[in-house]
Amino acid sequence: MAEHASRRCCLGWDFSTQQVKVVAVDADLNVFYEESVRFDRDLPEFGRSQAPPGPASSGRLRLLPAQSAFSGSPRRTRGGVHIHKDGLTVTSPVLMWVQALDIVLEKMKASGFDFSQVLAVSGAGQQHGSVFWKAGASQVLTSLSPDLPLGQQLQACFSITDCPVWMDSSTTAQCRRLEAAAGGAQALSRLTGSRAYERFTGNQIAKIYQQNPEAYSNTERISLVSSFAASLFLGSYSPVDYSDGSGMNLLQIHDKVWSQVCLGACAPRLEEKLGPPVPSCAAVGAISSYYVWRYGFHPGCQVVAFTGDNPASLAGMRLEEGDIAVSLGTSDTLFVWLREPVPALEGHVFCNPVDPQHFLALLCFKNGSLTREKVRDESASCSWGEFSRALRSTQMGNGGNLGFYFDVMEITPEATGRHRFNAEGHEVSAFPRDVEVRALVEGQFMAKRLHAEGLGYRVVPKTKILATGGASHNRDILQVLADVFGAPVYVMDTANSACVGSAYRAFHGLVAGTNMPFSEVVKLAPNPRLAATPAPGAAQVYEALLPKYAKLEQRILSQVQGPPE
Image 1 (cartoon, one colour):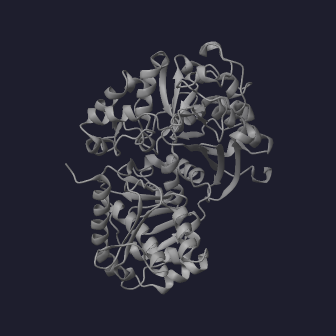
Image 2: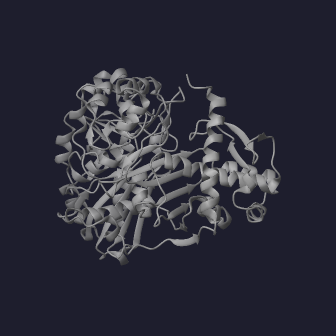
Image 3: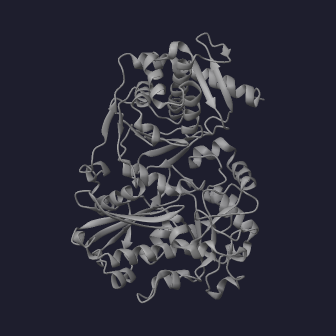
């Protein structure tokens, strides 16, 4: 792609579960270059068994259990992770991420990419994952030789070389201990934005301290995947940013400082191993001279704090105050921009990655596209056309008929089964086919609005909804979404949203000291396309239905969980 060699640009990186990817975005906010390395395809050596490892300090590349965070490590890596024998512990080899970066940079160099035109770099990392730097690693980072790839120089820099990632669910005991120390799950949520979750970093650190105290003692710095990646570019330890730091159960989201109570419940001397957090828009320093000499980066190229993949996606979708993004996939995910959050026992509240005074809420609903497909097959003759016809042929509010469709155990709320209620609030065993289709779609979107409002969200006059994922191609589903929320729905290409958002954030980091808002920085970016607007009378219909829906949900939960003590 040498024809683009002279464009001044920013690079946006994404260190995700299965790949490392980069995009280059020019000053007009056009993506003009992208490259990636998929772990399974391009790094097959991390999927093969190796000779039994020696001591962790020997510097040789090792992939077997002795270098893992936990015992019982498997002998193969699939999809970029090790799934351990217990089925709960999930880890990834940190050197795989390092070598992937080497490969991407070499591919860019071979293509003729002009690194001297890069103004700044930023990036995203899979949330909650952690990296444990061995004592002495900082000296290696600051004295990298441009004659050698990173993977060759950093082999002996990690006290834990198979690190816990977001898929891990093995820390239930540590979660309960943390909630008890904080005064309960709700108190912990008010403090850190979430109740204790097994994948959250503080609980993973606690497990490593308890099960591998020697490795913990020999750790001088603990990074998130995002700040680890930033450290590679900085040539020194990059701080954790506020937004990704919110996914650790350790950061006080309002004060933007580590919680002493939570630190103490997880491991000793943890604050010194984490270092102080920084604003997500902070420029943390100039790029390491390693990249200047090896690849031709300009010495003034800035490294802007890396953040988590979900916060970076919010930046890539350019949400503003009052906006919502709804990803309609296998699971449905809701991103909500908040000014005054109300953390709860469900969902997560993170510090906002593009406005340090505001917040980002994240809600996940497990029964998404697979449930919609089941109802399509059962009630619409396996046809999306018939499914859409059913939505068009039934009225807003569905005549007061409401449905809850939890084919698998739901996350928000914790319930299972299908529950149908007629206009009088009586549970019934079945609906007519067209009513069933509308009950499903309306119920899914009323649940999203109800639980978003539970976290402090309110629809405002300028609210817009950005819909992504497979169901965003169905205009009739989007019409119900617009009606239930009382706001216009837009669609846009969100491929590479974490990468693109990281490049946008890099541009923002260059001017963050001027107090220029993120929205001003990205005003030239492509606009989303309007897909649906609320029908007349929709607001009145759903304002009346939502309280009824909330009461019925509570009835279902009381049947599942029993009455409160």
